[in-house]
Image (cartoon, rainbow over all chains, first blue to last red; front, side, top):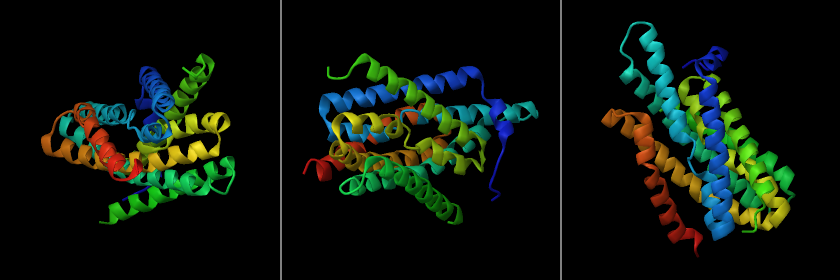
Length: 139
Length: 118
């Protein structure tokens, strides 16, 4: 397992795909707000963890992986789906981090100010996600 | 409706920008499983909680955060199912991910009934 960054991957995405993500993100955020407004914070809070952008994310991963294989003359359908499956597995670690993010805010806001708790919750999200990702990789 | 058009527009723009930012970060990391954690980043929360805290106060955000824990556990179940189903049934990932959204909702209903509504 080699961890790193590949900025060349950014060239695989088209402007249209980024616009699509932007619109998806904006719409899901507004819907979550309206649900919280209509049904209150208990139901509304559930939608703060709604996987609205997730289907588009795995779809783009599959499409880009398939295209890379096709460019080298291979049939990449199964490879693309395997990449999407791996991304979804990584998202499961991120989801546990998301739970830790919520837990930090829930407990911390009883005694501490919101801005500080939001920053701490982000650190906890990243750290928890990475720990669960690492554990999953080792299994 | 209690939510001004300006407020919703701000949330739309911030939500779109935050989702784009995290998806770009997720795209550049390798292996792909590491990038995947950014597909479950707290994007909606980051886009909405600051404005919510200003409007309703920290106690309201605390209640939302408790429900968010349940929503995130449901997301974990959902992501595991998607990962398994893509490899098991060899169908397109977007179709499986969209078809399994009710699994997230079902897990949320169970957690609401067992925990949140008490």
